[in-house]
Length: 208
Image 1 (tube, rainbow, N blue to C red):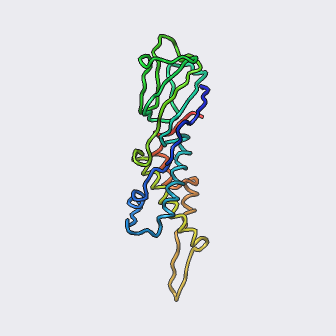
Image 2: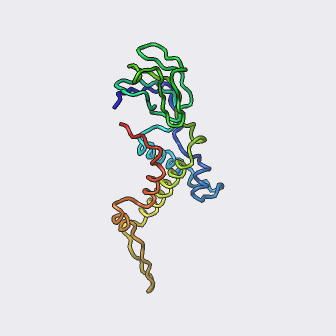
Image 3: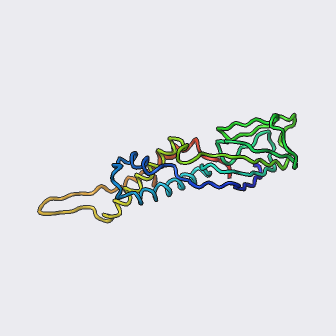
């Protein structure tokens, strides 16, 4: 595996996948209902970061400087993708002519065609990559974030009646559904969590 050092030269200012209005629409909350705005905004940030951690990457657009060694290949896959702009690449401290490499923006792949078997090391790439959030956030990521927010709100509601299984009043009885029993059968993963995993499989950064 290649040895890579990553330096953020222009940090992102927003890491949220959803706007407040988008979240309220996906959660079926009326736009005029502002009673939960602070909670929803917190959950947007929390769930966005949970998803980024699950995918082992940063989705927000940032300026990046990556130094590569032990590449052993013609290809380098940048840590932030899609690639928006490559400012420059050097090999052994010498600028690389853009005509000898090819950038695949969507995957973050940069391939060299210099007649050799691989990039000369160290190869240093200065570029801008990632999404301008929340506007450019892919719809599957927005959906995954909304699913997590919805589930977290349900958990909060369940916590208010934790330990209560049945209420009796004047001969009437109301039994409560126990979600923990279902989670145990699913190995601890809720259907919502499984749905999010399915949505995220194409966005995961596999390398360490």
